[in-house]
Length: 89
Image (cartoon, rainbow, N blue to C red; front, side, top):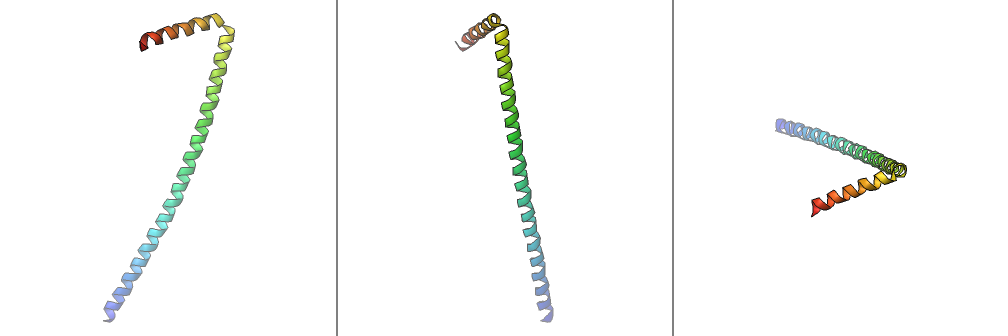
């Protein structure tokens, strides 16, 4: 009987250690998940800012080009409109 009590005690200790290991692993996974989400949020914010900046720069460049060459810009816009009308017909 003493051996079965000792075996049961060792079994409970092993289960307690396993439970502790699982809980620690889950906590680490939770922290790693939060860090990954924070990294993704930062990357999305940085990318959004970069795209917004490049879009504004592109608009500025197009405005400057139209101001420098208004007649050529109108002809290009008319040609593009004609092609789009032909495609969508």
